[in-house]
Image (cartoon, rainbow, N blue to C red; front, top):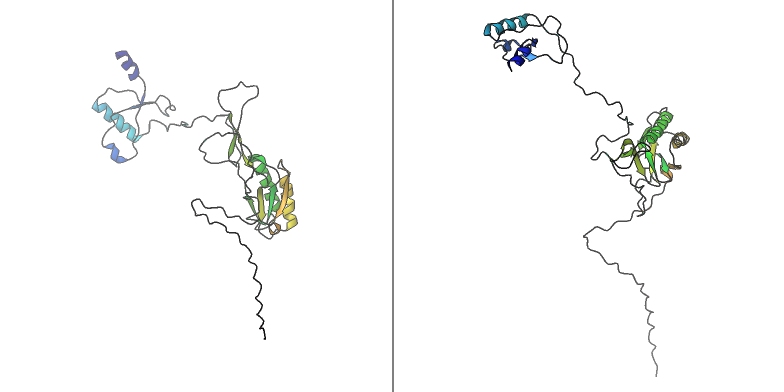
Amino acid sequence: MASLFRALSRTPLMVARPTTTSSLIHPPSQFIRNFSFGAPSSTPLTHHRATTSAHGSIWSSLNTTSAFSTPIRSLASPMNKTQRRFNALQPKRMKYRKKHKGKIPIPIGGSTKGTFVEFGEYGLRIKDGARLTAKQIQAAHTTIRRKIKTVKGSQIWTRVFPDIPVTSKGGESRMGKGKGSVDYFATRVGINRIIFEIGGGGIRREHAKEALRLASTKLPVPVEFVVKAEQIKPAKIPRPVPGAPVVPVVPVVPVTPAPAATPAKEVVA
């Protein structure tokens, strides 16, 4: 133990320099050794005996001149070079990092949600269910934006968003050892859903149709051009409220009017 103390006593020491004059009243009671930081800019201070006069002389020399340079050290962890870089279209926060593959929804209950143009004047409707990736949606959006940017006041609405992580594993890998890492993000789009809508700025029909035609080349499914003024929405059927009293429907029976009574004839004797 004594040999270890003597070995450590020969190493140079570094004292933290105070930033305010109020802390100069009491000299430091503990020294900080410099093991991992940069080399000092000047000759390091040699160790002095642990006496009050020695501490005072060291402290006075540190107050006049700086014996050590500012340590430069990166505290950030090294970047993982194999980390995947995703597209801009991805959720910011997720409850679970990975999800099941799932299936493309099929509206078998008669729902028409998301199948009509609501915000813009023209829309792009998908004719078959598919799983669209973030790259495909971003490429189609960029194509539309470049085409209609000449029309002042034009807008684009994206009705779908890729929020499903798709994982992948290397080829010829053995089974097991957990699910693969997240490769990209996608979204499951059902049949007859509106993907993009454009409008505003008095955009002409021919211009909008050409912009959506160019965007359709970036998508792997057939689509169609939809005009808001020409679409016909079906009438909404009210759903029964749970717990509400059921009013029985009484069939209306047509009432046949009775024949008018003929006046009785008087018999003359």
